[in-house]
Image 1 (spheres, rainbow, N blue to C red):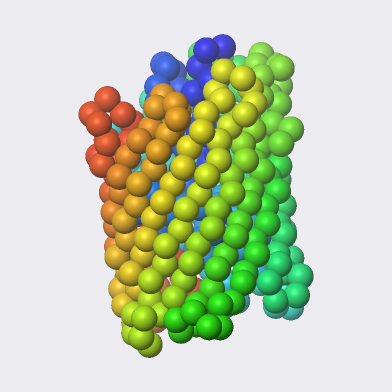
Image 2: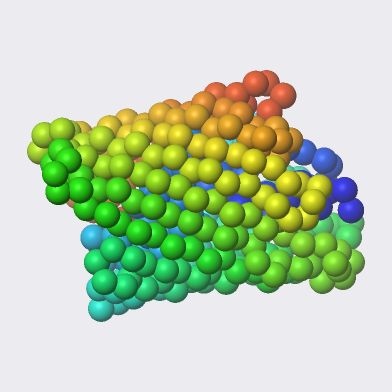
Length: 295
């Protein structure tokens, strides 16, 4: 049962064969490079994992992405995307897989819906199915839901095309496992965040963002965490990012710095992130690659 406390918090919820420290941030390379900021980033192809309410705010009709997170002993894979319908409605879907040892093949499937209200508000809901597979125990399943919101505030008198975004996400509601883990639940968390975008000139855009939140149920994984990050966007073609993540409980949410870069060419996107952390941390030498299409 002790292994249950080491679920991937916020983005994955997988048990390991031995007690380990596992990641709590998005597998999206853009989010990772910005210290794990997720509630306000407009990487809508990963919105089903980060903040579903950001999808209707995207200027794209649809996006599709695949990400690979490489740790020293683990491999994580994701495929996700969204499609906007009638400009205000978004359908989202995502699949995640986590592998540690032969036979350990854990999976999550997310399906979401988001709607934009007016020009500034959007709300989202995501349903999640988690399947934990272990060769030495029975398989386990859980269902959970996320609720999210995003608010966009244009700043007409500050810089050029400046915006403030405020986001919030309540995650893993109702995530109870069946037997033999009956009565155990996925970690319930709340995160709020803010981001500021502005163009210095037509070719140079700056984004700064921050997230604050934590996990408050069950009691043994309660923790506080915060993320800050920045992005410099050159001509909407090349992006450079950095950030820092503070974790109140290093076993579940460690401290780490991050940096990364992205390239946009026509309808293609390629992002990379690298984490800098102490050697005993799961975040040590972790890196993520995301590849996507815009439609």
